[in-house]
Amino acid sequence: MTSATSRADALSLDQVTKTYKRGGVAANQAISLTFRPGELVALIGHNGAGKTTLLSQIIGTVKPTSGDIRYGASSLVAAPDLARRVAAMMPQMYAPLTGVTPLQAITSIARLRGLPASDAKRAALDLIDSLDIGEWKDTGGEKLSGGLRRLTSYAMAVVAPPPVLLVDEPTNDVDPVRRPLIWRHLRRLADDGHTVVVVTHNLLEVQRAADRYVLLQNGAVLVDSTPRQLAQQSRTATLTVSVRPGTEIPSTPPAAAHAIDEDGQLTLDLEPAQIPAAIEWVLQLVATGAADSYALAPASLETLYEGITNGR
Amino acid sequence: MAVDAFTTPTLAVPRRRAWLVSWWGLVRWSVTRHKYLLPAFTAVQALFAVAIVYGLALMIPDVDQEAARYLSSGAWTLGIIAVGCVLAPQIMSTSKQEGLLDYQKTLPVPRSAILLADAVVWSLAALPGIAVGMLAAFLRFGLDIHIDLFTIGAILGAQFTAVSIGYAIALWLPIGATSLATQVIMIGGLLFSPITFPAERLPVWAVTLHQFLPFTPLGDTIREATFRAGESQVLNIIVVAVWAGATYLAAYLALRKRR
Image (cartoon, rainbow over all chains, first blue to last red):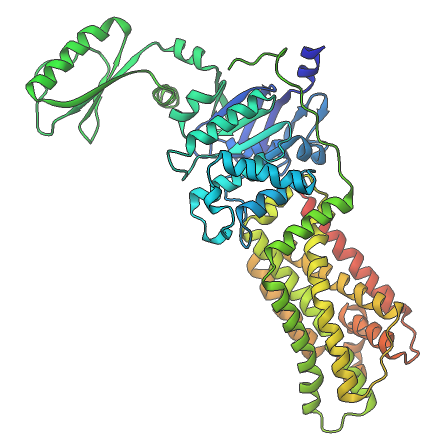
């Protein structure tokens, strides 16, 4: 019974295609994906890959040229008013805050989403607390910094949350202390049964929170996988070495793939078997003064992302 | 972290809310946003009405009863046109520019409620100005002004028509063109429409043209509603209703349009 209900609640995209101008380049082409309740999905990809278009199609401000988007059995393309009740969206642009304080803005949206006055205010204050922006809750929107506006926009999207949450770059311009608060909050929403779709460029952070990555390129799905699948696809580790300027590297690094960037950063992709020899080699570099520091890390989403998008 | 269909709670889709509830939520939001501007706006509207009644009368040496009726009812009509066809589209343009409109489009509220929230707020804020204008006309010219349901209906109807025209312009034209169009309407309305003066002073072709444009019928209806000269308003009301209906529909369709 539970699984049947959950299946009915899934958000599914079927061959969704969008061409803005007749005969123009497709913003989305034949995207088929299913997002389930409880899932935190990271939508990643270059600028112009079609991520925001996809969110706008789900909420119904952009109409697919062809294909369908369904929530359970109901088509959201045919019923945009249902789409707006099923989903809430945090826009990539700041939510408009001219003339209103964060508390007023978040409370207004909570009331529009159906909470009674007292509950709306309580929900707004709870969110303000979770995001640690209480100090500015009564500051006029036009006086807020970019980061605070972004946090307020985020709160406006997730207050009185409907089943599906579409969040477009929530952590941009947000300080490093509050960014984890957003991710933790999104994680909790997913655990509470919401379907959370996050567009982000912040791969380092999202890889700790997301259940699944969907990589879009040129409007099509290039990769759809879980962190474990991604890690298994490529079991390499990355060794980065800060080479002191002007030093010649005395010996060959023990890995086939390596590159020095403009800042004197040497990057080596290592197979597990190559790691001991590489460590020995880099310690020697540090001892002789050819390198300042080094870091060894398992391949991150970022390196995988670069590898995948550059490989095509 | 893994998604488990058996332990994940199932969430209900929020039910559709009554039109009035959504509309009221948007009105509250709008009033919060404009809480400093609204009183200033009401004051300016009142000054505007007084200025026309007293100021335009200065240009005419002997104001007889007919001229006084034209000047006063013209002042109220121009106030309504200024709010509906200049202020309302400007607010809509700003809302387009700031992304407020796109944001409101993603909210679970009826499109017509979005359209009518700001419109009602500004129309109501303009009402004290019209009342002050009536008082000014009474004090300045000693006119006998009728105020009953017909008067109120005519004023609210005129406000709805003017705002609909303004929104249709703002929602269909690009932002730059909107401000140009509103300027043209205001100059045309103020100078070349027989609102503050009798239509007989214009050439016949212009009178015919104005009979089918919205502003002169609006002015005529409001003059008849407040002074009761006994002229039939059937054609005027039909013309106004057609404009109101067509432009409201145009604005509504623009708002509903998906990219």
